[in-house]
Image (cartoon, rainbow, N blue to C red; front, side, top):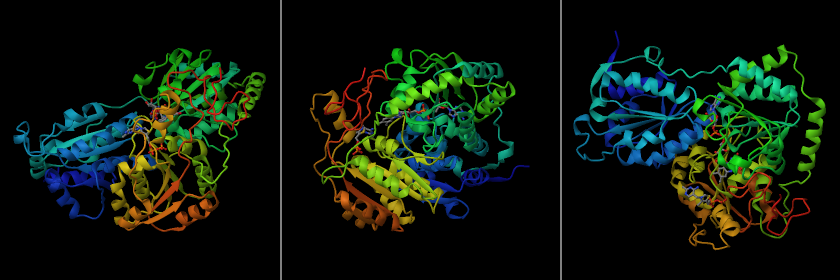
Length: 585
Ligand SMILES: Cc1cc2nc3c(=O)[nH]c(=O)nc-3n(C[C@H](O)[C@H](O)[C@H](O)COP(=O)(O)OP(=O)(O)OC[C@H]3O[C@@H](n4cnc5c(N)ncnc54)[C@H](O)[C@@H]3O)c2cc1C
Ligand SMILES: Cc1ncc(C[n+]2csc(CCOP(=O)(O)OP(=O)(O)O)c2C)c(N)n1
């Protein structure tokens, strides 16, 4: 016999059964019965954010840093619509989150009731799945299903919309074990014939590359471990998308660095010149492929992806393997070893020699000259001073600073790097850092930010102070919408249309107004000392690092160009480099 309880109590019970420890939320009339239940228990912690967008990004940060789903609770109408950007962000980056929204009572739906919005309609295109629950007896079953759908297969955001009368009414509770989840059981094992075909190609390949992505992180720590074994076993070079950083260690000897629009010279040219590309949990995003018809023109391509709809969506591949990265890599290694396969040593040695030539270009080289801090220098110093911290997490906002962080900071483990890749959401990083710090209270959590992005969700400083979350906001302040300014300089005839702000706050005073610590640094000579002061402070810090205003982020493949047409910075050692970078053909 199922235990009877109110819908509101069911919500809290279902969250407990799902092992939820933290909920990020903001109350309002349509969720008050649920908030009343939250008040009467101590197992689940509720974090009161300052804006619903912040709640969703915090849940995303929590999810990425733990591998567990993040949970949000928001009210109807504006509460739900404020969550839309976060939902879309999580959908694009395959982040598992469960968002619970209040709704007006069932009998008022469609009447333009106070704070009524068609939440399931609005969020249908930006969730993996969503539900409007009109009967209390279905509620607990649906919440359990929601957790299952968010986490199984390709992870993503789900939303459950709960009318207020459904929260008040009572019905029997369906425990987690009895919930209906059999209808969605994505395939995790890859086809063994395809895996065997891939092993054959790997043995013949002369110029192979492992192109890894966010799917390795999604698959869990075992997948990163198996990727390392595969790299070790084969000696193949490894590159990664922005979303996959840390799956293979940045300190590993086969690491080529990130590829794509702002990827490393050697990684992009290796993608362009390879004869076998093995895509492991990446989705051929346009920041990677550039001009499609010129993308990796001479390679055989294999693609391992848990989502069948991702395969052949952008790039036609020769060996499609639908399955979970960890399962497929385990089988691949097994087949490889059982068949006694060996790599083409001679071909591989020549390939590595070619890669070393490309590496010698030193595409990330910069010179810290003059009295202004270069953003690359600031991040290189932040990296040097925090690299050995035993428990470091880095979040970012969106823009040049995000790309420099990806280039100059190294990640040796998965789930340590939180960034908005697919949607590129300015305002993501600060609340994400709050989510990460909630999950790992003793860790060092740094959000590398641009001042413009950071201002988009600055209200969350109140959350950081209230919950004593010692998040470090490392703002590279160029007083510009830097990435926009860069495109205007390089692609729009240096017409700087609305790409700077003439009224920035004093970030030190802003920190103090919230009850946090503010640090300002504009001098390369005192930078290390200022960073150490930030690290030593046991509380939230806004670090305002005034940097060179007109620095460009290189390498850069202009949108729609092929990989071998790359702009490089002036300090890299290639002969053909001009003052603002040169086009390499
Ligand atoms: C300003 C800016 C600049 C950018 N520049 C670059 C750049 O230079 N380089 C770059 O790499 N990115 C860049 N990006 C990010 C880019 O837009 C994409 O977000 C990113 O390239 C996508 O990474 P991914 O292919 O790993 O895919 P993800 O979005 O992480 O998708 C993961 C893929 O793996 C699959 N998957 C998920 N779970 C599993 C599993 N368990 N097993 C198997 N498969 C699974 C999914 O179905 C999906 O196809 C930039 C973003 C911004 C905002
Ligand atoms: C919400 C949102 N609006 C607009 C953009 C377009 N955009 C991308 S980068 C950027 C500038 C970011 O400036 P800042 O945060 O200061 O970082 P910087 O590039 O200077 O490092 C803008 C406006 C975006 N990505 N997200």
